[in-house]
Image (cartoon, rainbow, N blue to C red; front, side, top):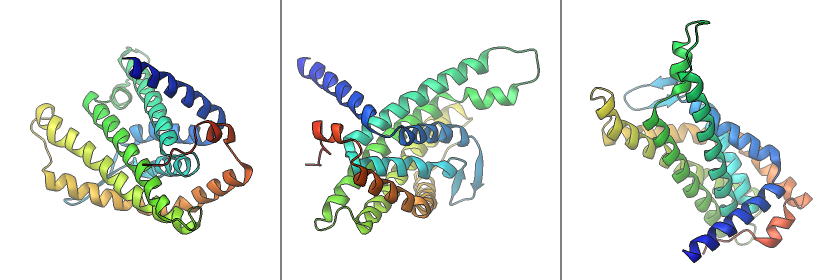
Amino acid sequence: MTKLKAWLIRERRDTALLLQNIPAIVVTLFTVSVISMNLLANKTLLQLDWIALDGGILISWLSFMCMDVITKHFGPRASNRISILACCINLLTCLIFYIASVIPSTADDYTVFDSILGGTWFILLGSTVAFLSSAFINNRLNWAIGRLFRENRDGRLAFAAATYISTLIGQFSDNLIFAVIVFMYFAPRYWDGFHWTLLQCVMCSLTGATAELLMEILFSPFGYRIVQKWRKEDVGRAYLDAVGQEAAP
């Protein structure tokens, strides 16, 4: 119990220090992208036997780019802390949306509005578990791959390799965990037997991750420039001196 308390105190202290040192615009964009994904996922953009894409693909690349940028400059634990913060804010937002959806109104017919904002509890559960799991996988893998480039860890090639590989695996993990939880476990119980097979989950997760990777490749040069700018301006020096980048063991 004493170790747990000490860990919680340290995490609270380090997170507070991180929030004082990390540029607010990145945290804001990351949090908004997580909330937006939750809303945009309500609309299916493409559905075939071998691929299914929802509106979340339009913004998911931003979440992973923010995580990659934070991981590269501040380390994987810092990125995990911001991911947890964004997830908590998303859950709070979903709670507010749900309360708004169940409050009756005689002004107009808000049935569609309420159904979108109200959401489905097991979809929220699945997306939360999938997002946190994939965030931890992405952040640690990004850091580990970047460390393999011993001669030029800060170069464009190292950034691209770490970003592309970690994004593909992270996005695949996100899609697969969500699909298994929602479409293999809960859907048959709550949606009149509707379900996906494991093969469908894997194939849709792979094709979805590939499509999301293409979006990441398109916008990742912006992430690289941000990291270079932060390094040049010595952003977050107080946090880095106190905590460090926390290299993977």
